[in-house]
Length: 306
Image 1 (cartoon, helix red, strand yellow):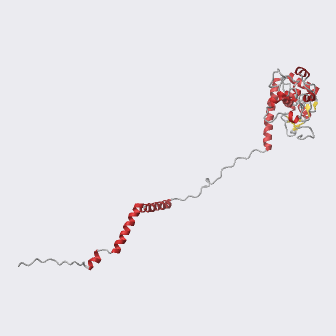
Image 2 (image 1 turned 180 degrees about the horizontal axis):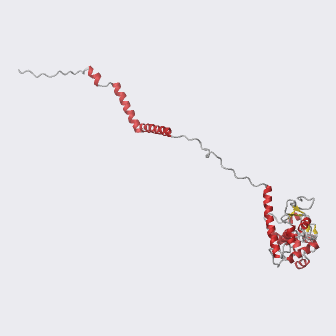
Image 3 (image 1 turned 45 degrees about the vertical axis):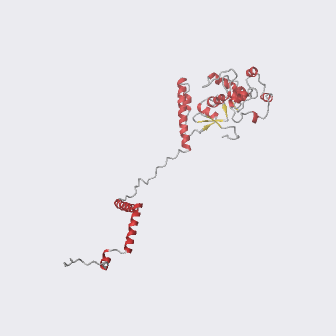
């Protein structure tokens, strides 16, 4: 009988040494499995990528900070903007105004001298705007300073009524009291002024019968043309004639009824800007400035008087 070939011995039992070396334990397998699962979850949430990106960013910021060169604050950057210059003092403003007014007066005097052929040379020579001249002069002092023969003095009151020809043609009452009472009367404080929001000129138009002074202050006689601009010499002469006869200084509407084509506020302006500066009439309610401006100061002893 042919003997069987020898075969290596195999055992169904595992070698304990090989088991310990090559085969991991159950606890080791479970730990590795948990690590694997955790890594998969972190990758799914991109936590690892984010952590790595933050680490790279922090390193870059640290390197950049180490390369920054610190500079001391510049004095130019810390300088505050300059404050605007303070406004001129009141005295400086007054001096500037006076200088401009004096220049305007000089121009007017030169123009008048040229137009009158040198007839006012004495006025120009007598006008001395030095520090010794008071800031304000009475009308008499102004005339003396300028070498003007003064006209009559007014007391600030007009004592007449509407011009007789207009009283007749318009059928007006013969006195202020009669005109007021015969056309409704009432309290002057309420009925003599335009109401709130009412047009003053239209109100004055309605008052021709009851309060002619109010009417003629803003309106010419019906059918009469209105004149504007500078006054002619014959108008100025008429103004002085009316003032000598009836006085002037208030009730300019009634006064204007004697001056054709002019209204009350025009007469008031002419009194201040033409009549008084030329010395044609005197009035203690006004003083004259160095530049030739008539300034209203009121009656002596009254409120607002100088």
